[in-house]
Length: 134
Image (tube, rainbow, N blue to C red; front, side):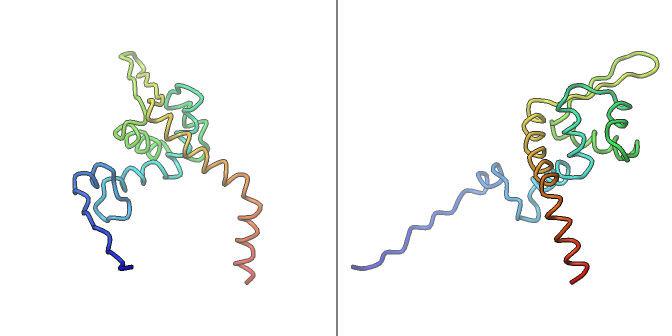
């Protein structure tokens, strides 16, 4: 029996771009990954899972985040379509943030990672200690 080589078909570039390729240096998916997986973005997404929040309430709920970092994170998540920003024309300014349907999907994914980290902290701490002592 002779062995035939498989027919190699090259995937069209437009299909690869549409799907994304995080391993490629120029893939636009990398920016979205960076936005979604930053420490502050994960916490923002998780906080907004419970509902709409104003900037000050969001900052209060996420301990340790500066106003600047929270503003930058919200801008990135809004630009990516994960967070909805509604500004009310009143004095003082009133802005509310909530998750879009896409944002709810990604929040569920990052919550899974955050939950795993919380549950695994004893093992992670043990591994960190072992490395320090090793």
